[in-house]
Amino acid sequence: PYVDPAKLVADARSGGYAVGAFNMHNVETTQALVLAAEEAKAPVFLQVGRAIVPHMGLRAAYEMTKRVAEESGADVVIHLDHGPEDEVLEAIKLGFGSVMYDGAHLPFEENIRSTRRLVEIAHAFGLPVEAELGKIPDADEDVDWSAYYTDVAEAERFVKETGVDWLAISVGIMHGVPMTTPAPLDIDRIAQIRDATGIPLVLHGASGVPEDEIRAAVENGVHKFNADTDLRHAFRSGIEAVWSQGDRQLETAMAEGRKRMVAATIGKMELYGCSGKA
Ligand code: G3H
Ligand code: 13P
Ligand code: ZN
Ligand code: NA
Image 1 (tube, rainbow, N blue to C red):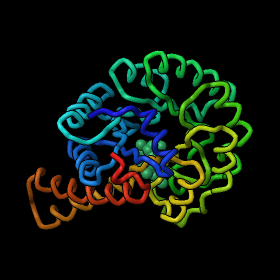
Image 2: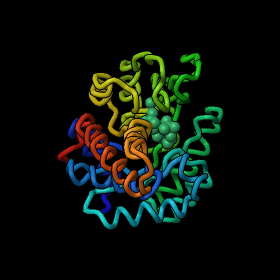
Image 3: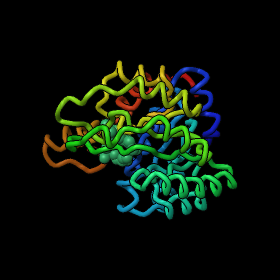
Image 4: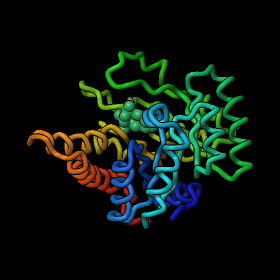
């Protein structure tokens, strides 16, 4: 069944854990996420994001996710991940449970203005909004972190002036899994942003982050983790294992991918502390 996303994250905050938010890419990966949620008794955000939207369109991706979600017994929220403005508006119309508007590339004042406008619209329809402040680099991008980190004072103003529900921050994370060992997360900055904003924080790029840093992030204010790459790799390893034995049906290969992705997703849910919370 669908669950109230605002309550889901609020419960995670009061319970001292985080909810997993994972990207769907086709029917089998979506099934893997709901199967894991059922088995782990964990609530889950099913994210429609940047890879799938150009591939099949927002509406088709949403309809597919909805169908898989409604066939399952898991507690789910269908969430738009990294939406530009037009996708956020379309997602609200389609019936998504919550949305992320990503204006992190904009100058600060413009990010405030466009986020505030979308928050007003989304709230009128009863949807919570996640927004991003500070830029999140891709794995192995050579970055000057000082230009990427979320600034604490800016975060305070951003949240106050936009009315956003959850804030995605940049504290040393990267999308994807870097080949070289990443610098540790800036846990002090997470705590400072939590204290300055008073709202639940979101950590993107959770693939490739060491487990002790994930736990420290939860203790300091992160209550939603976005992970994609690690689960995609689990799915791929299943396909490769079947295909390396010679020609096999696509379904046989995807079934093995799905099975491995279920196991990997349950592992994340246990790490984030949301298993048993559905
Ligand atoms: O925000 C990220 C997209 O959903 C994909 O992330 O390229 O690190 O797997 P990724
Ligand atoms: P990873 O692929 O690093 O897990 O990041 C996923 C993400 O942030 C989706 O929004
Ligand atoms: Zn992300
Ligand atoms: Na990552």
